[in-house]
Amino acid sequence: EVQLVESGGGLVQPGGSLRLSCAASGFTFSDYFMDWVRQAPGKGLEWVGRVRNKGHSYTTEYAASVKGRFTISRDDLKNSLSLQMNSLKTEDTAVYYCTRPADSSASGDNWGQGTLVTVSS
Amino acid sequence: DIQMTQSPSAMSASVGDRVTITCRASQDISNYLAWFQQKPGKVPNRLIYKASSLQRGVPSRFSGSGSGTEFTLTISSLQPEDFATYYCLQHNSYPYTFGQGTKLEIK
Image (cartoon, rainbow over all chains, first blue to last red; front, side):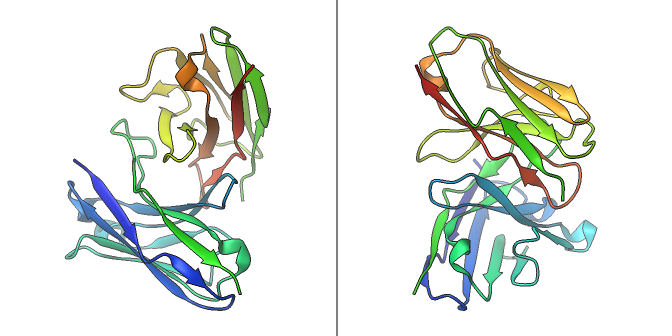
């Protein structure tokens, strides 16, 4: 069974930094692209970014709203995904989901339960 | 970035109704579109991929259609468990973008 478990959320002041982690199990983590998606309280879903697998040189993509401030990385030996968030803004307040996306695959995607990040003074 | 515009933003309907939600892309995305359902306090669940392919395990009352810039999600006969918020997602080009959501409520 695929499991994705996020950790690292909490309260941080504007301008501060936070690092989220996602522990993956139940599948060959190193084979897959991985995404972060967020959802502000009472709002819609926002795609944050992606890290590709080794076969695609671990390259990354980001939403315009976080580019230059957030960094996605992975550790295939530890089956772990990370999201380093710097220069945080109040509008970054959201639940952050780690996902194994499916894109055009029939296999289905998987989501963690999310971790809440609150940016407030 | 590609903008995804869903309509309506909210709607009310009755059990047994046929419901259609529309998603429009600001440029051609071929069929690289998925539909998700999200219930309160739950993570999103993918219903449709490649615009019209039904995810395994999803009831056949859900269907998707469209290509290019206009897409629809149809629920043929609403069931009580279908009252939720629905999102489209384009994955034709980066950054991926979701529609703003359609909240489906009980009339």
